[in-house]
Image (cartoon, rainbow, N blue to C red; front, side, top):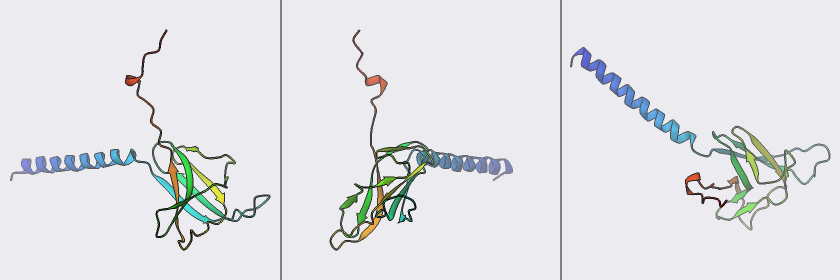
Length: 142
């Protein structure tokens, strides 16, 4: 193999590797990425003293998502416990839109075990909402 062929081969391999990396990054940025962290809360002021637990959600993705519900999953079962009584860090209510790199925290009571099943982890459910494209819209009368 001559020097010219070696240079050509190395440039071709480099181009193929960079193409694969670019494809992976393109696929990775189009995914929803949420970081859900449960924890024990220490509340101050006039907050409800029963709210001694929290679930924090951070949108790590490149686009906004709407959080529809928060709750807990239990070990040994596929049942889930949805938060019904909670206090959001901004005082609002769910569903809540999270912009990229934004987060919210929901304060709640300590999750109770479900029979003999203890709490496994916290979860956040996003709202799946698809808007129709312009091409499939019916023409308006008038």
